[in-house]
Length: 595
Image (tube, rainbow, N blue to C red; front, top):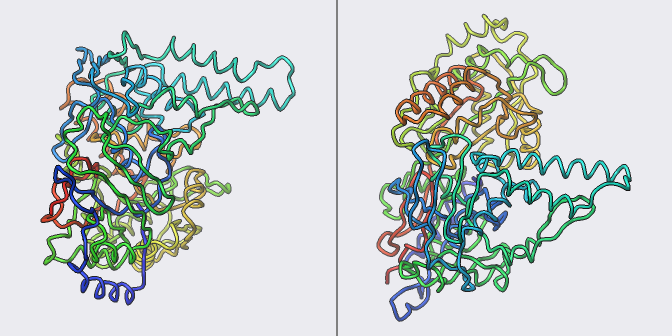
């Protein structure tokens, strides 16, 4: 999520000026209604897209656009927490939970008229399993039998090829020969079958109760094999495949199977979509197109919304006085505050040795617990962020996973006196000798006020002095991945409605894992996750996961602070069909702009 700030005076000026313009727009931004009474929906995206490739998307704005252009086997309606048929009209699951058989619709078509086939899904999922593609969520495919082994095999191929090229080996196989070998291995070892063009059989390596939720996620969307192949080539120097990424923003080449087709993509300006006449459920589309305006400045975006240039502004950036003012505007029915399936926290480096060779005092759980117990989270959300976010006591936000009750009782409360005792027991009475700590955060964001408040609390309650390191986002990400920090900001949004989307992040790290940034290694925690992975009884499984989270919360490898909320702007008298939900998955083709 992008956190932007602006000076308070400028915010107030813009608010006053913009409010005077409400209702003064001379025309609807959606234009005149068509013969069916449909208008275009115009909304704001706070950031330009990082990728439009379904297998590579990870950011909210990218997923939102992909949901408009592509349709997976299953469609998730997170507003009602239900899964609906997408390209697959029906499916069966084996009794042991290891095999899913999907039956595709006969009338599912690509935008060029080609049928959407089971082979298109296998092709797309294979792309996600290729290190060449660098899919952001490749690990989600690893629930499929043989997928992780195939990923590692291909990575080893590319690595060995690079070594042989560097050595100048005359007997080294060609890149094309290695790719042919990889394709054959995929077919022979990965648990995907296509008995015919309308049947897809998926074999999992272990029961995965949330597999249908995964199948509804962007990484599992199909792509049009012929056109994607035409934009893909082999890099002989590296032995890996590469793709002309311009394909994804070229309306002349991009072939899709969702409710819309791409009409125009203007970098950092807008994306225009129009209804896809080949979409199997074209009759359900309630508008005659979409314009996504990209406005990365909070003040400019607010002006565009208040002056009537757009209908909808989802996820107004937090960290700005404007957003806090909007969130507290009880008299405005166009301001919608929604709790989110996301948590803000600080990562704690738990490795025995720090990256520079120093002994790490944070490897002691008592020190981590003491730090957690001297953060007044209520003060953070009421006086610092001013968004009144739900105070976090667990990593998994309450109420976002059906049947799961997070173990809030395991969380250490606000208790500075006990914290002092814990520090003394760990060998740091009055924080003496506890040195060299710093908080790494993203400069120029609302995080600065948060970490300043935490530093003040630690200094006042424990006598502990820590440095603040505000750096640009790219540098922060690199240092966290490489564990070159003692304490660092962190945030995590769930990808699917199951506790594992949070808890798997804390599994034993393998190398420099970008997920388990804390480097926490706790075998009993991993054992519970492994046990839950093979438990078919849903109630017993969630109980195991609850015990695992309780164990993690007690150990504090990360200190949870609050659960996110989002502020969304739209006039319910003008815009119909927006279903705010904690997962923020939107089905924009169901949104209607009223006269």
